Amino acid sequence: MKTQPLFSQKRNFSLARFIGVYQLAGGLVGLFLCLKMIPALQQPSTSTWVGLFLAAVLYIFSTLCGFLLFRQTRKAFNLSLANQVLQVLSFGISGLAYNYVAGIKLGVGVDFLESWHFKAKLSLSSFNFSFGAHAGASFVTINLLALVLIYLLERARDEVK
Image (tube, rainbow, N blue to C red; front, side, top):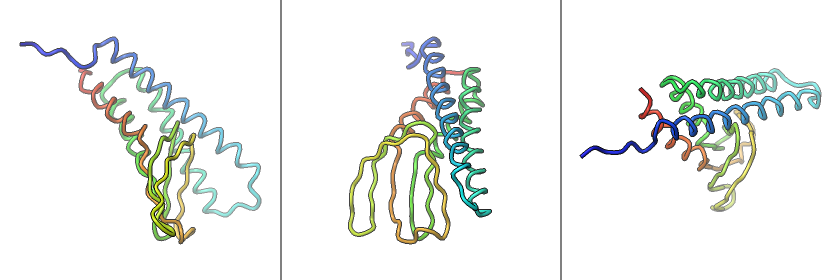
């Protein structure tokens, strides 16, 4: 008995194109927000510039993943998977905080600060990386949309030759 592939070649291309546009748009929105932030900075420190540079690199990476996904190569799918994996987990623990979203975040998480508060989060392209600051911040958030995109990318990648 012959099994039907989950995604037909045509549907696979449409899915890849949709995710490509999503990653491209998320990266461009993030870059725009980074550039918009620069004039508002007053005497930024070196660490601020490093943070902005890191955010810009990640948003450029997302944009590149979006462009490459139009070619539907295994490498494009692998890079897009890496981009989505970077967006799954956001956390703040003992002065270390990380959050990267290129696109939309549909998150669920727990805030541990005073007591366990379960939260749902919705946000647009955002980035935060801090070390040694916000020592009181204690949270973990999972981006559900990134998990769904990882699943879809893996399934579509398996159909690519």
